[in-house]
Length: 302
Length: 282
Image (cartoon, rainbow over all chains, first blue to last red; front, side, top):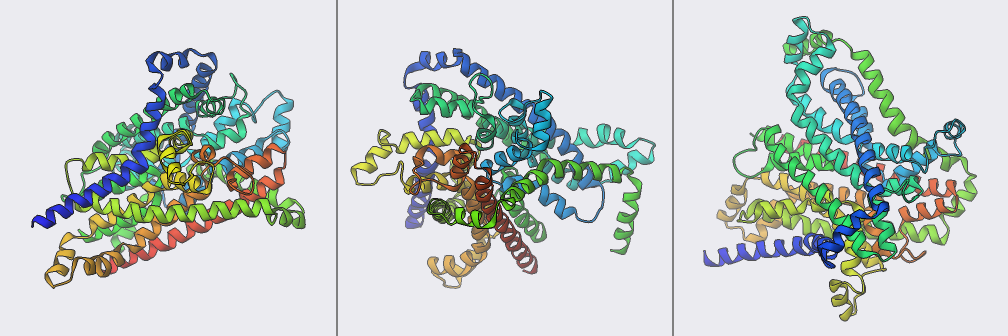
């Protein structure tokens, strides 16, 4: 018994060391470097005009991205969960595709599709509409990268809900749109919010895709992650890490809120262990179908 | 069963609006996802094939691919070992800090890649304390392939933990206890009972970490130093080709990455099917 206990402590200790070395050290570095010159230096970073314009652009891009992907997510989730049609698996796979595409390739794809040397890009440019190397292109690239999050979150939730409520509403004379807004959506509001939070966090932090399409014009097409890169390469470490720490705080706060929402959205996991909760979280974190399989296995096992 | 089927059949007649909803959904997916990706492949294929081949087989491109695939494979392998271990501790050894440890696993997913990139580069750089410590023992991390492996291991870690954890949790602990009562040693239990059941999940976690590693850019950019032939990964080479206005060259490299990621996706899907069918059969 005694040696068993000792072995437990050793096992936990090694795991803590692994996570500390791999994850906690880099995280601690962000905050240490941001604050090493004091709170005053930290605060001045945010009064710098280029930093302010980067923050403004990031907020605008995130808002536009979340708006588009939320609208699409509601449409896709309703379509997939409430109707039967052939090729549903292909549609789901196509929606998930951006998760496996390198961010740089995503940015390149947008650039090659609507860039200045393409037909649509040239036409728009001739009419004074700038997409590549302009905020519009940054929004398009960010939409691509964060495309699946709301749709995926909401689809799973609506599929679990079934369609009895909708059928009841429709049989009582409600229109499809009324049914969606008054019956389906109010039930799904926490799942929707969850997806929007994840989409927002990813949109604010996107770097690779945006760096290809933005052109990095300071004060105009520079987002916060891109400004972090510029400051770091200029050896303005306090500035780079002050922005990095704020961005990290924000994205981790969003993750935290999501974790709290989890408890509301989903039935609590099976008594022993956290299997179901963990599977949910993993799925939302973008791990995809892989955790759907163990979930099915779990359901069968019960 | 027949009744359920008849009911389901009736139900899609009850909710109207299938055609417009489906058309709009497919339309948006096509415009946002499929067309841009098709344009990448098309751009690559409109270049002359010999020229394209000469570029992809050039020393610089080959070095970038070798480095990208090699580093991603090595990092995913490290993640499988470290991630499976941490998942095992999280499931089997509940202690005071389990929730915190569990939450920390997600940090690489929550941290923007550029933030992770400058943090790793500073920590393991020549002036960072971990970098200086390792340098004193003759190990240089920053601006070497080792730094790239480290960054990829960082971003891929949660994928393995989250793939293995639920499978392990669904595996009843009395399985192991039963083996132990029957006289199996602890090691024999792990090797003969636990490992075979976990192997598909570990492999899936490996594939997910690998897929992520192949395309990773932000967290690698700062620590790699970006020396052509030495520490230039494929996504970075795409950016460099674009800066030379070589759109065909950039698209060719992107196509190789897309095809690799797609192949991995299919592999993961097949693996899952096996995983699911086996669990159901049991």
